[in-house]
Image (cartoon, rainbow, N blue to C red; front, side, top):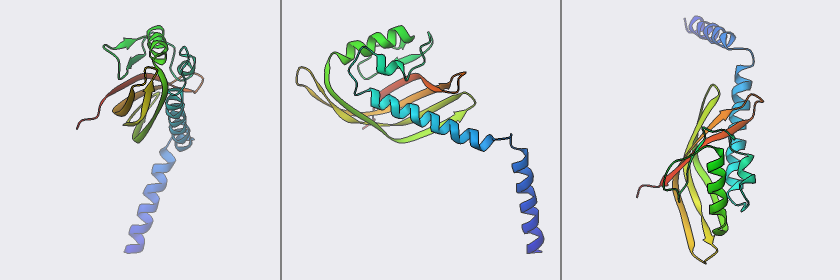
Amino acid sequence: MIRRAFFSICAITALGLAALPSGGLAQQTADMDGVKATSKAFYTALSVFDDGEAMGKVFAQTPYITYVGPRSKTIIVGWDGVKKSIAENNKLFSERNVSLSDAKIHINGNVAWELGHETGGSKMKNGTVGKTDWIATNIYEKQSDGRWLMVSHHVQPKPQ
């Protein structure tokens, strides 16, 4: 009886695996790796103080992307606005080191979202030292060439 149950479970599992799209698991792994790579590139680009060029390699340069950074007073929409905001903020800092921990990523088709805890520190050109302790939501979109790019970044203070 146990043997029959074991073989039944094996048969059901095999049928379930056969029903998966060809290469489905490999594609899921590749997509997860792509999202993680873009996330890593974003947090690396935060330490680059340029005119927004480093972030231009991470963000989709479309009119519908959104950005709410820690200094934002409103939702910034579109690549032109995001790039301008990044360039203006970069002029204020001499150091910035931010990383994401406890990241939770979910992928559904060509869209992925990531939530996590941003921590780190910064030093402004005026000498002010700041601490980063935020909750972040990042949204990514898979492009027609297979690359994952950020379409939204939003941070808020971590609840105390």
